[in-house]
Image (cartoon, rainbow, N blue to C red):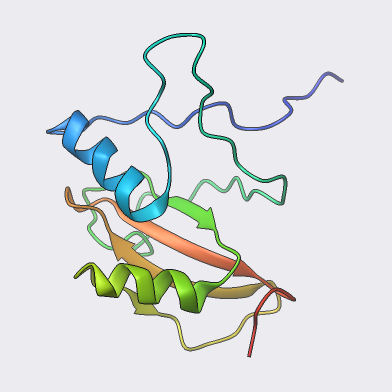
Length: 125
């Protein structure tokens, strides 16, 4: 069976796409889609990716009106949270350490949920 090799993009609606793209670049390092084919797109590091549909009734994403949530892998959850908090962005750490790592939650300026994940064995305390 032929299989996909990874996620090639994440596309979603936004009230102000340019401002939201700028926020992701400034605070999470996710660069905007290039305006031409000569510029390189954002590259992610190879690693595990969870693909998990949730029940319509889940409260895991926070706002029940949100249909998606992006989970970004990070090398150091503590460093990323400090950086975001220094920029005035609220980040909530999940105090539990799971077998697969540590997690934190924040929301982008349009209220979309973002989960940060530091895989187990990285910088866990």
